[in-house]
Length: 256
Image (tube, helix red, strand yellow):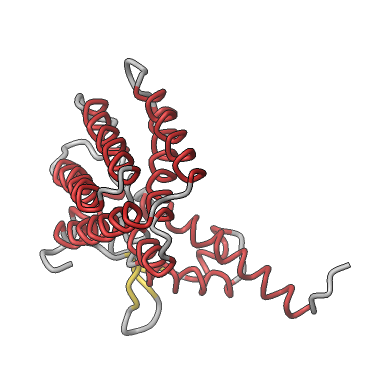
């Protein structure tokens, strides 16, 4: 029997519903179903997402904190647009933080369990990239393994403070390690680019194991440059149907 009060149970349920609403609303925005500049109506979301206004309000506030929404002077929220510079700066910040975390991981030393799981992630990515061509399922598996590897790199540093800051940064639009991987699915060089990224994964893990902090940091900083390259290709692509959210960048002004 639960010892929680009815009020506590209600708060917990609203929190769960807010997270679900946040995830679904983010999907709608990045799928292009809510284009840049669209004003968000709470009541419409209640009907569309099937949750009450309280978790909807919480979800809207969280997405504003992530940067996908902006608060309007008249009240309510609208879907933001971004300049290419906005996204580039977010990727640069991620690269800086991941570089620092990689250096600390090398200096402080990861656990055997962390190294073993990281190797398993890389083995899984190798299996994906061994396919002669990559379908949607393969790209999604790559995304999951890639994100887990990056999380492990952060955990190896043993710094909850920096890990929290990195978690905030990767929630920024298009700033995650796999933010532009889906765009690569349309490129003839897709698999080649992912192989380069995988080589950098192996190099940074080796540097961490060897305690080479400076080398580990430099590799992770260079690793983020692949995302910068993908950003440039994405916003200049004539075919963005596979990633409609890129329109949020195309429509952004120079200052965002």
